[in-house]
Image (tube, rainbow, N blue to C red; front, side, top):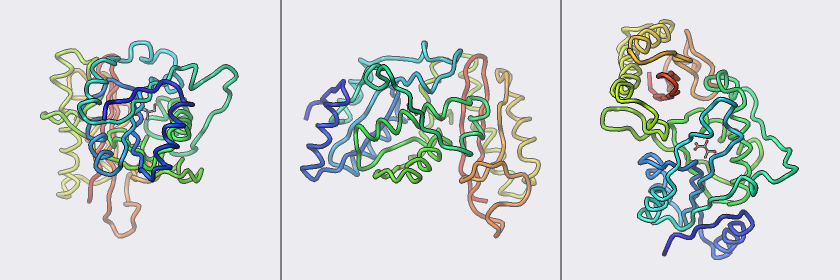
Length: 290
Ligand code: PAF
């Protein structure tokens, strides 16, 4: 089946209704374009689990603050479309900003608490932009399942909370981070890195792995994990700022400095970091079992 490109929400709504009436399950991957293998892994998973796969490309202005990279966000719709076609995606939804945010639009969807932590501290308006657009996209497309990459761990957690709190009838499927061969987590923003920064960038993953090993082998007490991680990240010559780097409770995203939240001294914890390499902000995380 050829890739159907739909540009208006009223039409994709009708298309989705038609698929549901035929008893088909719809897998949905919302994106901002500049697609890479990470996105394509979500498409593959959706392909396996559903009858119809819908991808959206919409660079959502509401999740960028003034001074962030909205105007320069990488765009290559030709390449994106070719990738989606090859992957057997059924529908590409590419709305205009005026369709998503028409004149008079004045609603914001906010998830409280977990959005204040980690990235929320440094991008205070980001998650309300994400939750507002994701609510709209889920309402418009009405998928059976929606797929999100765990590279954006906090985004996955916030969206899962949103869908649960608002009784939205969709299953959120978090999917593993896809990495380059050298360990760098795939991201549309990696394109901003200059050659020197790109060569250094895998050290972010290496730093997290180092701390994971040290914690697992009891060579590093939990209360020193953040200091060690910061030290390792700051020793990367192109890292200009470490915004956060520590061990967190994977559900509440509260920093763990001493006792594990699980009571039994075991269980998964999240190592998460955000660093700046020049003007580029990179995030990464590892969910580990202690
Ligand atoms: O992860 C992204 O690309 C975006 O935050 C999303 C989920 C498509 C919302 O704009």
